[in-house]
Length: 471
Ligand SMILES: Nc1ncnc2c1ncn2[C@@H]1O[C@H](COP(=O)(O)OP(=O)(O)OP(=O)(O)O)[C@@H](O)[C@H]1O
Ligand SMILES: [Mg+2]
Image (spheres, rainbow, N blue to C red):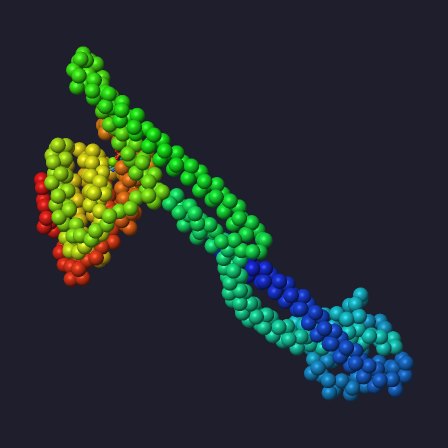
């Protein structure tokens, strides 16, 4: 069972039930003991009554006189007591008619004992000496059994009530005990790389939980410090590298422009210039990400209809797709306004498009579907490439994560999607990857809050093209 709360509640119910059952058994023993002891006292007083009645017959009464007296004495108690008198040789002098000829056989060891006779309830019997005779008096244990079964019924009823009550108490108790842990869990869940300053509230009580919260807070302090150092280092290193890199590139370009290089040398310098451009781009990307991490980017958000913006993007996308011998489609439906800075959203779309184009084979189609409904601007970039396994779809948004496939020579740096996520987050939206339509290819989806016209929701079927369909 996963939940500690459930385990605590079950343990509480079990402990209460076992305690209750133990109390029941002890109580049962004492109640039965006292009820039987009461029977013994009644039997004893019956004997005293018999002894008083036969006292007139002398210390050794003759058997016939004793029998006769007994019949007279026990006439009124026939329903209640069973009496048997044994003579000195073990012969039966008198036996109550209720015994139906059965012999109670007195215990040789015990003064009080139980008797089981066929056809009769279990009896409680007492053995007494009356001159040379042995008198056995018994009475039914029926009333004791009635008391005990009433006791048991009450116990089972109370047991059910107790299980119900202790379940409720156990549940409440476990919730109360685990509340500080849940608080820690919720706060720890909120603390991410972009929210490292939050801390777990620590109660003033010095218990194990508050010690744990204090320890975790100290760990978060250290993590925050490390993150800040790494960010500062990245930002500073990127910044410091930019100028020398630009100088190196300018020198290399100058060498090519001067035209004094042999063809082999010129080829080598061209490769250097290309690699330097790639390095420069990585540095720009890292600078952007560290500025975004430090919340140093402010957007110039303007409410606008995204349709014209998409139209202009589609023209470039069309050229890019043609260059790669692929086709590009754009569909848009819905109306409304969305607060964006086109420069950054264009960067997102270009990165998603270039990823889609480089993942898809020649002749395939990349589709951008834009919908502006239900207060949300959603853009899906769908391709017909190999897609990304479900377990990797979140990882590809991490920095420097690339999935290398045979035949894919495109040398990206693995920063594009991390930048897309930062830009979309700066717009108050979210970006994620999912399987493409019909499970083929990949769909990269971003959503940004928008103001949409209420009439428009669902008025145009999804995917109905009304902007551009460039193929
Ligand atoms: N449409 C797609 N289909 C298949 N894989 C994709 C798709 N888009 C992204 N990926 C995978 O996600 C990885 C990360 O993408 P990302 O854009 O962050 O980096 P990149 O394209 O490799 O480099 P960069 O964009 O920085 O030049 C890619 O290397 C690729 O393996
Ligand atoms: Mg990319």
